[in-house]
Amino acid sequence: MKRLDAMVLGAGIVGASAALALARRGMQVALVDRQPPGLETSYGNAGIVEGNALFPHAFPKGLGRLLKVALKQTTEANYHLAALPRVAPWLFAFKARSQPHVLEEMAVLMRPMFSRAIAEHEALAAEAGVPGLIARSGWLRVYRTDKGFAGNLHERDMAAKLGIAARAVDGDEARALEPSLSSVVRHAVLWEEAAFVNDPLALTLAYTKRLEALGGRLVTADARTLSRSNGGWRVDADEGPLMADNVVVALGPWAPDVLSPLGLRLPMAVKRGYHLHYEPQGNAGLTRPILDAEVGYCLAPMAQGIRLTTGAEFAARDARPTPVQIDRVLPHAKALFPLGRQIEARPWMGSRPCFPDSRPVIGPSPQKGLWLAVGHGHLGLTTAAISARLLADLMVGTPPVIDPAPFGVGRFSR
Ligand SMILES: Cc1cc2nc3c(=O)[nH]c(=O)nc-3n(C[C@H](O)[C@H](O)[C@H](O)COP(=O)(O)OP(=O)(O)OC[C@H]3O[C@@H](n4cnc5c(N)ncnc54)[C@H](O)[C@@H]3O)c2cc1C
Image: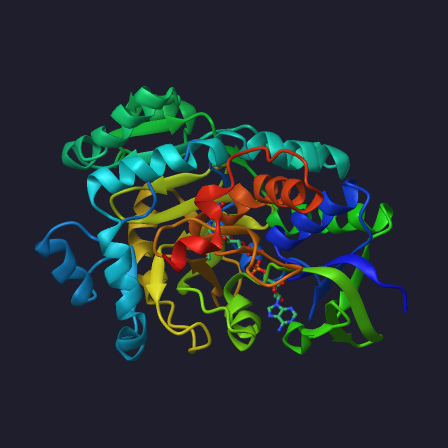
């Protein structure tokens, strides 16, 4: 069989964007997955392309907060006791990177990536014939208390310093923007440099359809069959062996299944999250996603209904779902917005693939022809298209769109 220029393993939004970006550069590409594209983590997110993103999610601040998490009394986080021994080293590394000055450094380091995130998705969506899927709606973070709002001042100051639009409004102004929000909202911040995708699966599928139109192929295979072959790489697909000079691992939370046997051990943990859809009551509606900042969940007006998404759950990736956070946040969500009938019987679950420094790995690995686009964490929809552009620049050898150094895999071996 003909040897390809590249095969991309994993057809989530990260792999689909990468494969499309490579095909646009004239490479012969196959996008490999064990199932149809876009059905895992990339299916169920809150749809926010956070061009505004600043501080990564941080370790809980203060003993009181930590104790509440430990006692499972918080709405924004949950954990499985059995997972803690394994995740402990990751948590220590994560905590070390949650100091305020480190968060500021990270905001500056990530800015080139976030500031280009929407434009790069718009370019791919236009190429794929679905420009309307990326709506420049901004998103609204709402606060129920003066204290909660004041707690966000540091982030707004940082936004002002970096020239990111963050419009602070009072409760009435928030309700003028989103009339269905209730009077529990006392303050809000409209982050204007964000876009919304109301059907993340449709976006992934549009990218893969365009990939095929450019001559790329969708191939069904188990990525764990990856092996070196004749100076290149081989995967055993259902249709027979697939060979390529280069392979891109874009397997999201499953990346360690393929990388560890190759001797590449990366400090990845998963933060699981859940969603459920609800019908809005009567004429209620939302025009953009809402984060209930002090409670820790999002409401997003998706094609399927109002999607309620939860915060982080530390658990083994494959442990059985425990969607307790949905139960914990639901009364708060109902007090914020008139949620009606629950649409699905059971919550959806996904696993955010996270490194302790909240940055993805994008670029070459130490092994010839093995490339990485993994660990996009809480913001993989946001960063998929700009990651794809950076990866394509590095693979083709054109000047990289942003400095690749912060995303190199070498940072874990220092
Ligand atoms: C509740 C929740 C809300 C979120 N909200 C947002 C948001 O608003 N904005 C944002 O930017 N991000 C958000 N995220 C994060 C974002 O969804 C992820 O970072 C992103 O989807 C990761 O994409 P991926 O392509 O790396 O992984 P995935 O989408 O998981 O894709 C990995 C692919 O690999 C395939 N695969 C796995 N194992 C194998 C194998 N052995 N062989 C072949 N194929 C295999 C899978 O089938 C899958 O298709 C959210 C995440 C969650 C859970």
